[in-house]
Image (cartoon, rainbow, N blue to C red; front, side, top):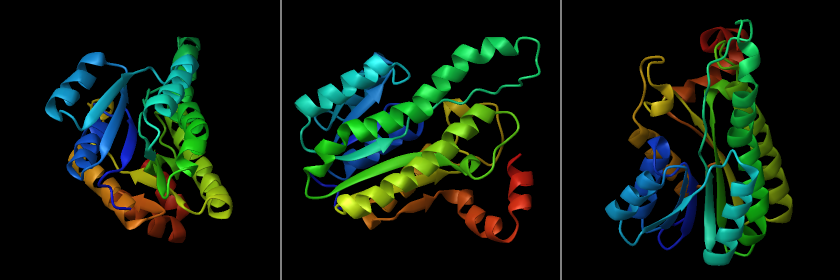
Length: 247
């Protein structure tokens, strides 16, 4: 896909990887619609990239806000051709802690944002994407979709679910709408607010965004970002080794 002149929607588009995706896409000549909870960060990006980006404040863990985004895009951005489901949160949880029952609201929010919102936005905007000459759906998953880590069971489950949904959508589009390309971007550990204080050897959001944008332009089905590129080969020869590393 040539991104110049395309209209792209990026969830979580004013922070972390999403912020760099917004910059990269705008730099390629695309018109970008950012979704984010923080109105101030959206306005900062609009000021930085004046004329190239638009922000829609929304909390995608709330079904009413998801419906609002779908309605707004259909009404005001009828040329939408690129959907990037990037927004996510990760909560470390130990279900054997005394206060484990307090996790329930956080579990519900994590499921809603990481998985349900991506599925609902994809299906809700699919009729619009079908009307374009060419379109791309990108779902940002993680190496933890292949094998989970101990400390974030719900996050890992949402990314595994998103990976499965992405493949199923790719099958359906190949059969019914072959002009819609469905891509999964499998992340390594990226230096963002979400990963602050966790892990080492992180890559920059800029590098992650560049690899995603390159994958869109090249029509890749899967982009394994940075160290995640080792996982398919390792998993083929030793799934138990991959499980041990990621645990």
